Image (cartoon, rainbow, N blue to C red; front, side, top):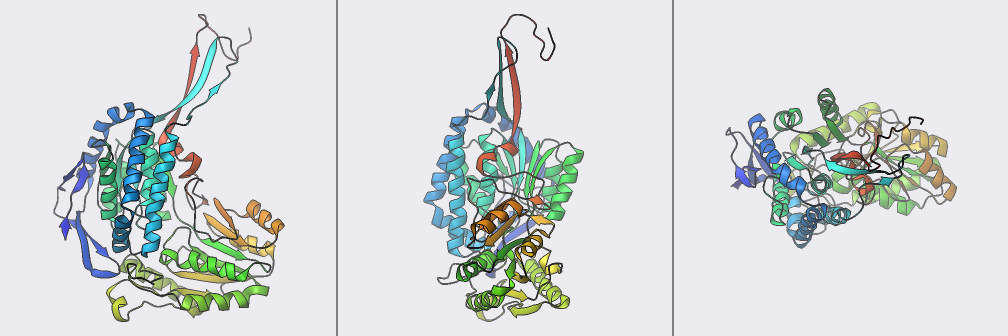
Length: 493
């Protein structure tokens, strides 16, 4: 068990207090991977000071040079993919094949963002006046705060860190308290790739302590946060009062719609992956399955049969399909929703219990859970559970299916299975979500497209894709008048 400090100014720095957090393996809670400081305002101050001291030099570094560092970091991450994936499985719990995918997403983001370093990032536009030049350019915001969740401990930080760095910002990074070691290794790779000391600083700690101090800090120009809706609302309120930019990605209550003409076997494949991949701990998880009644029995029977054969266990063990949930607190929350579903009158078809047999008793395992006879307004069909629980909701028409799919406070990811091209394109137009899939589950976003949603899913910002730089850069409009005389725009001569 190793004790780590905060990473400030390129070195490990002890916290001002002796309070600590332990990173534990959720598959074996008696295994402690490391001990980290439980930081507060003093540590945040030190990290912001280091980041601000590094800003002028990093901002002056040419965009292509910044891109080369990010690319080298991506190549190092690629070389160490297996090492990072195994660490992630031990610290976060997702099965090894998924952990490799998490790391690969970080590699892909590095390559994509590094390429943006040599692409045009402004425009030249015609002026309405003679001998006058008009153009735009991007500039960094300054020092930004990045606050990330535990479910994608490499991918999500890279979605935020790499664009922020390419745009010329310096960063104070507060990772989730459940996955600090993955965050530390990622930043160590960036510095090994040539990132100057102080450009990225890590403060470990709890949200109400370190996170709160970071958001409130006057030296922070912008906040990028992925997490829960209540916390997102709180951050938005703080940033609004300070006129500070913030981007929020806050979750979803995503649905797969299965129409009567769908390939049922393909839809079941998608539902299994969407509902139980990462133990349902994805903001894009398929927690609602909206099924046209003519296929309800076939779909439900096949889903239950397949889900019952999923193997729970340590994600490092060959053949395991579903790993643990992140911690005991989340385990209790997931089971509380099972009790809610039963109390609402939904019929439990599978699971609905904590797994306590054999080796599973050492960790935080919840059996894949399927509810049937779910009504659209039940809490289990409206609230984000963030666990391996999904609800089957019958519908009688495409109109009803679209209404039910759109009928939550979230709008992240929605999916529809059909063999009819007209149905598919109607769904593309009418599903209220930032991401729509046809004949694929609600998970599986690729980094070259924008990621994010509407309604309570966030505040309208997008990550990744062609808009990746938008939340971390400021547009500047520039006019150069070489006429040698006063010219007045919009004033008739």
